[in-house]
Amino acid sequence: MMETVTKTSVIIVGAGPTGLSVAVQLIRYGIDFVIFDKKEGVTELSKALVVHARTLEIYDQVSLAQKAVQGGEIVQKVVLMHSGKISARLDFSGFGGRLSPFPFLLVFEQSKNERLLYEHLQRNGKDVQWQTELESLTQDADGVKAVLKAANGETQMIEARYLVGCDGASSQTRHLLGLPFEGSTHPRLFYVADVEMEFQADEATFYPVLGYDSFVLIVPIQGEKRWRLIGNMPEYNDQVSPEVTFDQVENKVKQLVQQPIEITYVRWFSTYKVHTRHAETFSIGRCFLAGDAAHIHTPAGGQGMNTGIQDAYNLAWKIAFVLRGYAEDSLLDTYNEERLANAKRLLQTTDQFFDVAAGDQWYLRFFRDNILPSLASFVTQFSAAKEFLFPMVSQIGLNYRDSSLSKHQGDHDFEVKAGDRMPYFLVDGANVYDKLCAPKFHLLIFSDGEHGYQDLKSELEKEYGDLIDFQVIALYPRVVEIFGKNQPFKVLLRPDNYIGFISTEVSLEDLKAYLNTFVKHS
Image (spheres, rainbow, N blue to C red):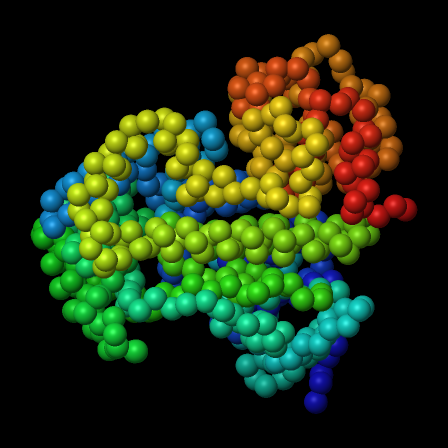
């Protein structure tokens, strides 16, 4: 018997990092939601490991970045090893210092991310319905109805305007929506383990160890002698579900490292096959997929959890603007447009990374043994190379230049284009992003000081006060360097701090034309 019917604005299926991030973002916009998960609570397993600069920038908007940094391990060095010998030392410190307020990789496990986000929900008077799963869902032109089943067998119906499936690689949401999950499975067998280990190592350093047909990545985790081991077991590749013991993994690690190692305690250990897949669309009607429910890829570059959090960041403001009556439903189409294109690109690059690390073709082995060490040492000595690599790995280089929300009419003279993330720089010694925390569009005027732009500000506040805030920023030398423009110009930022358009016009005409494509007129 159906016990209750609850009405809300958004149903969030799954309370991992992606689902919790959707919830955290919706709180910023004052949107009501129900979030549930079949787990008993936030995961105790470390699982995904790395938090990148772009994710920390998102966390910083809701005052969570510093907590993450304090609870994690900043890694800025890599020691590359071949057959027990060091083949290259790479120093990434200062790699992205001019590019992000978080110029590093942060080892901050998934369990810690979930706890950080969950506690934020609780502080804001919200909670997760744990041990609850999605039994069925239907949708029509007006909304979505979902039947939830609790661990005790009781069911409830939730009615909402939208539903977001963040329920992982074996997503029930995706299954109920009938969306295929096409892709491939790598034949190779991989392992992951969290261990306590005696190992002579430099502080805050990754150790990739490459062998003939296998590798292990040794990653420091915050805590005494705690390490993550990630690698492959080529001798078990052909078996469908091989029984691999940790002793076999330990032997493999010792065989590769060829240095004194003593594993004293195994906290967690798992073997798995790597899949590369994505749903053919990330939205259908009023239902959306995000995170692993929408796309899964190799663990190369630690992109998975971060990409799910970016999905949430992209989708939440669009749902919020439609629900608040600011925007037409068509705005929601841009979620699939932007994030599916990103997922396809990501699948390609992580696959290529992965083949270099674990591929068994002769030319990949030759590259790993003979070219990679000197190439890596060479590359990290050049600031231009650093400024190329950091944006790629940290996800700050991700752009939506091809999106229908990116208008390029005025940007041909600029180094930065519509669709790019708002570049980072300092304003009076402070992070420019500190001015961009309000959950709105932002109109930034870069001024030479000759105008106060009061008329423009008054006109903007009168017409679009709820939607857009207004900032005047001096044309600092660093701004001129980044944008490639030394005369006044304006930038419209979307609520997720990606550029909608850039223009040297001082009027609001191009702004109105831009907003007219998706903003509702009252």
